[in-house]
Structure formats: C-alpha cells, structure tokens
Image (cartoon, rainbow, N blue to C red; front, side):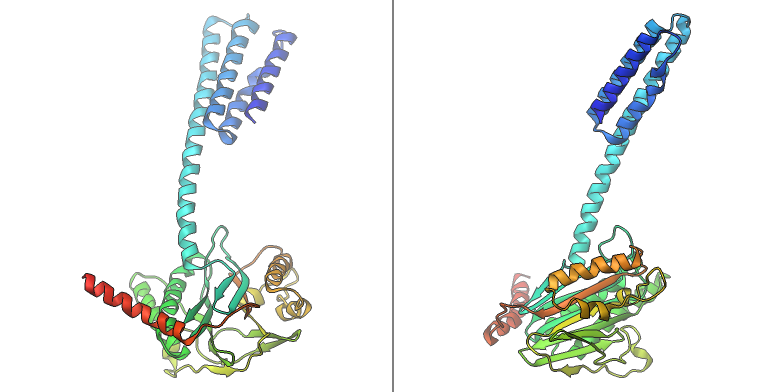
Length: 375
C-alpha cells in the first residue's frame, strides 16, 4: 500500500511537471498520507508523508511561478501540517490497535476459562457441538455447558440464563462454577441442582442490592454411572433428543421442574429420572436459541427434522453441518445465544476403575490437609 501511494504521488507530480502550470493534480494528493495513516505501519506512513512533502515543495517552488513568495510559504506550511497530522493519526491508530489487542487477549482468556472449548471429553463421554453468542464479538453469553468426570460418575450440564449476551454472564458463571464444584462432592443430581440454586440465589441477592436484575436459569443435568446407570434431571429446560439406530426421538424426561432461581415458588424438591441408554445411543442437547431461531418466513428451526436427515454423520461433522445450516436458516441473524451438544460414548473409551475413582475422591481431601499443614 505504501509503495503504491508513493508511486502514485510521484507519477502525478511528474504529470504536473509535463503539463505545465495550468493544472496541478498533485494538490489533490494530500489524501495519500492519510490513507497510509489508516492502513500502514508508522515508518511507511512517514515515508509516504515525506515523499508527499517533497513533491509538493517542488511543485510550489518550480511549477507555480505566478504565486508570490508568501503564498508559496503558506502552501508548503499547509502541506507540512497534512503530513504531521497523518503521522499523529497513524500513531494514535497503532496505540489503539495495541490496546485493543491486549484487551481482547485478556477477555479471550477469561471467556475460555468460563466455557471450555468444544469438543469436551469426560471419561468415556465425548461432547461435540457449537456455541454461538448473540452478542457479536463475544465467546460467551447466556448459555452454559460443562462435562466432568467425578467419583459419582460422568456428569454433564447444559443451561440457559434468562436474557442473552454479556448481561447474562454473571448468573451463568455462578451457576457453572457451583456445578463444577458440587458435581465432585454431591452424591445425587438433586443435591447438585440444589447447590446450583443456592449459588444463583446468592448472586440474585447481590444483584438486587446493586439495583441489577434477578435472573433464573433453565438447566438439564445428565449423570452416567457405568454402563446402565444413567439419570436425567431437568430444571425447566427444553427437551433433548435421543438418536438410536438412525431414529430421532424427542425426550421430556423429568420435564416439569422449575428453573434454577425459582425453586422457592413451590418448595418441592426436584427429582431425577432414570433412563436406559444403549451403548451406541447419541443424545443431542440444545438451548432454545436453536429451537426458537426463526427463518425469513417466521418459522422455527426444525432441529428434529435436521437431525433425522443427518444421523449418518459423525458427531464432529454433524455439529459443523448443524451450525452452518442454522446460520443459513436465520440469515446469520440469531436473536439469542445458541448451543448444541452432541453426546456419545467415545469409540475407544475405557471406563475408570473403582480405585481410580477412589483416588480422585481422596485427592481434594489430601490437598486440604496439605494446605492446613502449610498454614
């Protein structure tokens, strides 16, 4: 870009020298250093500005004999001001780009810590899928997901915070952090959900004190213990889909439970439901940002039909296909955070032994004892 601008400036100056004093096209070349300031590095911008100043000085000194000395001095002074302004503009742009890069790096690191990148692996389970935030430029928003291997089995959660985008991050972070902790220490999914609700209640209380909005969270928890012990607990979340032998079935196991943050309305304890999966079953979890995404004609995205059409695809390819199809369907105009998780047993998964599970259970206690000794 800089070489092109320098070449253009020299060519137009040469054209002015050939055409005589009647036309001065080079007077319009003040745009060259400004373009360089917006597109080029500082030293290249300085090179373009220097060539521009030299060419303009030559024109004012040699090609405008009818101008007075004072007019020529004023003209050259104006040219110098344009060059200086271009250099200041370039420096400011570069400083802001560096600040943006540092800020983006920090924000990216924070967002990666909050939501792990897909695919997830927890023991023999693999979870492929995608997450799209409704807020442009954000990695996270109002949807949460996690899969962890615990002494109580493999546990997975997908959730949707009331609201969308950046304002919903706080509530989502509280619920997700409480799940990651409780999943390792609580014996049942009901106890895990209760701990998640307690964390959300504390967040809502703090938010209300600051004049913020209290939020609720729909969530679906899945637990896999061994080959057959699988349970599902729904906290007001939408249905999930079971893919078995190429057939897609919408499942509403445990439906009816209140979302997290609203359990106080009835005071009734949530109940998990036992399911009987087959070894090669797939489970597809999603948030309502997918099922309620609308096309140009106002229709909802037909997730079940799309799944039935593509059950022959591998999970990673299915995730990519679904995301591309969802964006085509909505014209790239998603109105809410959208998450899909495609969960299955890995083809080469080896279940943990009881000794390994006991060792993991004991590890946190050993860490606490070590910290106490150090203190």
